[in-house]
Image 1 (cartoon, helix red, strand yellow):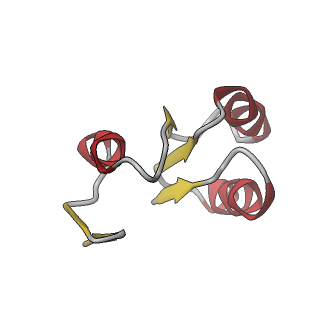
Image 2: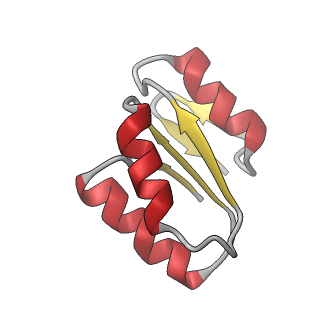
Length: 80
């Protein structure tokens, strides 16, 4: 599961909730410090990949895709 905006707010809440359910999370945010704070809230027993990324950059978003299960970036969303 890829979650952007995971450094705060809804993205952070979603990351924490999905982390409790298990599975591999790829979490990203433009602010590496807030992303590190989110990482501290997540279970250390789960698989979590962190990405400092600007979602307005398609190139940066591909960096998440290469490290996760998503297959194709299509005009603003990942096509599974």
